[in-house]
Every structure is written in C-alpha cells, then in structure tokens.
Length: 379
Ligand SMILES: NC(=O)c1ccc[n+]([C@@H]2O[C@H](COP(=O)([O-])OP(=O)(O)OC[C@H]3O[C@@H](n4cnc5c(N)ncnc54)[C@H](O)[C@@H]3O)[C@@H](O)[C@H]2O)c1
Ligand SMILES: [Zn+2]
Ligand SMILES: [Zn+2]
Image (cartoon, protein in one colour):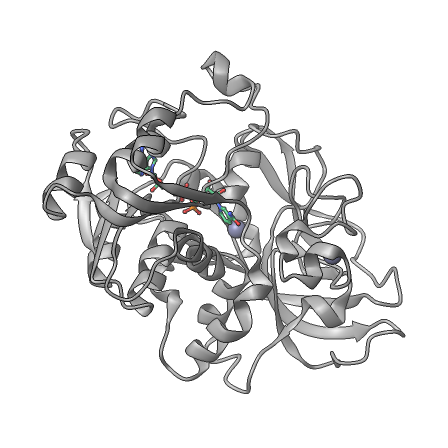
C-alpha cells in the first residue's frame, strides 16, 4: 500500500510499504478515505521528537471497515468509522474511568497510545491506504447514514473537535463564561467553537496569523491579534480589567513571540495574566518531558519558568493533557448529524495522499491560508 513515512527532519515521502493487516483477533482493518495533517504531526516533522525514520504518520483517520478479526462483535464490514487518535483497550483502570488518552494496556510502561506518534507505541499511522485498528470494537466510532455526505465534518471527531472540546472541559467553561484562547490553529479554533456550543458569553482568540483569526471571527469569537505582543492587555480591556473566567492553551511547547521566536513559557504565563482570580485554565497544547531541540536550557529538560506566585495569589486552577477522545466523540458526532455542528469550516485544503509531502511543508510554514489539510488516499 501507499503510505506517508517519516524519513527525518522536514523529510517525509509517500512510498510503497507492506499492507496493514489484521494481527490480532480483536483488530479491525480500515480502508482510509480521509486522514488529516495535525499540528501534532509537525512536532515530529520538524524533528522535535524521537520519531523513528520509516514510521507511517497520521492519527486523524476515518474510513471503511473492510475486514474484522474473529473476536470483533459490534463492528461490521462496510461500516464507516472514525477512529479516535488515542488507541485504548477499554478495560484498564484509566479506560474504565473514561480516561482513554491514558490507557495502561496499549503502550506498556506508559499511559496512552496513538497511531503514528512518537512515544505512543509502535502503531502505524493512517496517512496511508489501510490502517490496523487494535481493539476495534472499542475504538471504532460508527457513523450514521449521512457519513459520506458529511465525511469532512466527521473526520474532525478523530482529534481536534474533541480536543478543542476537552480544552473547554479542562477549563470548566460554562454558559455565560468569558473565555480566552491562546492559539487560532485548528485546535484553538475548535476550542472556540466548543466554547460557543456551550454558551460562553465572550470568546477571545489570540494569534498573529490574520487568516486564522478571521476564521475565529467567522464563528463569533473576538480576534485578538498579538502581532505587537499586547494580547494580555487586550484581553484585560475586553473583560473590564478582571481577565477572562476561563483560559485555554492551544499552542504548546513551541509557542512563539510576535517575532516568531520560540519562548516556551509565553502562553502559560500569558494565560495566568489573562485569566481572572479564581479562574481556571485548560492546557491541551503539547508540552514534552524533554525537548533536546529547544534553544532554552530549561526547555531542554521539559521545564519552563512558570509564574507560580501569580497563579497561586490569583487562586487559579489548571488541568492538562491529551484529550480522551472517546469521552466526547459520540455526542459530538450527534451534534454533527443533527446539523448543530459543522467543524469542517476550518478545512483549507483537500488533497490526494501523493500531495502530502508538499502539504506538510506549506502547513509547517503556517503559510497564509493553510489552516487544515485533509488527505484523501483513495483519490
Ligand atoms: N492534547 C491533545 O490531545 C492534543 C490533540 C491535538 C493537538 N494537540 C496540540 O495542540 C497544539 C495546537 O495544535 P494545532 O493543530 O492547532 O497546531 P498549529 O501549530 O497549527 O497551531 C498553533 C497556533 O498557535 C499560534 N501561536 C504560536 N505562538 C503563539 C502565542 N504565543 N500566542 C498565541 N498563539 C500562538 C500559531 O501561530 C498557530 O496558529 C499543538 O501543540 C498540538 O500538538 C494536542
Ligand atoms: Zn491531531
Ligand atoms: Zn486501557
């Protein structure tokens, strides 16, 4: 089959690899019809992880079930399914509590597994023609009859729609809240969209990219252009000097200042300043335990200089981590099928798999207009 493999920093290619196949009786084999490029893929693409050369990328996958293992009961050949980026067993201590992003079975010695991801187990990604789905009955989200028609909406259930929603859950967003979101990438935009679905009264989205901020405005958020570094002041002004009730971090460890230089503690400390006393902060942007490629000595050790004193004095709360996609994907699917949500508005490019290497390059440069790329391996 054709698949996109990681060769080394900023070097990916579409090559022939052995077909994905059923390896265990609980597996499901999916013919991928849509697979997205994610901001998380860029950490690997840029060589900022220990991703091994030769591995297939892609953790935002949707497709058609073409074969099921002997022990699979619920999922049938012909089902159109969306796969959470987390691979989970369904029976460990964390999965039982709905914390499928921290499954203790699928990546022994660690909490959490994923397709095509550094440090998340040996699983191949879905930027390919076929994908092996472990524990298929648990991990496949079956889609309703409008699956093909709304495929570009449903594919967002694999990661960024639930992840944006998770940011608002971690931050405790409730109806009427004011919300400050750092990052207008796909995840930040989905957090803004989720805050809006939850009835937030004012949603402020910070970035320097005007095309991405325009999308935030399109869904009713206030664009906070940080091109001159004044995001915190703008948010304080928009909230009567108090700060927002809730804050969401949707950028991660490679966050930059207005001059595009990495300043790893910038968004976290900006959030402490942008959020009101007793407010809460949800962090879904990725921070790594080690980042040898960082310029900053603390960041190399996975540390940042955090405004803990200010955070403490303000009595703020914070929660972090991978999104437990399965905790939300069923309900968000129903919002899509009932016409209450349409997350495909963020898609800027729909391309064949063969165009993936150049798409990675454009998306990595955060080139104007390259918000979200979806790939169609069947085309
Ligand atoms: N927790 C999870 O489960 C999960 C899932 C998916 C993605 N992620 C992570 O979420 C983060 C965002 O993903 P994405 O796909 O939107 O990525 P992206 O790289 O496309 O978007 C990030 C955006 O942040 C902006 N930005 C950079 N510095 C900033 C700053 N100081 N203030 C405000 N904005 C700033 C960039 O201009 C960019 O538009 C990444 O770290 C990704 O790995 C986490
Ligand atoms: Zn992703
Ligand atoms: Zn588990």
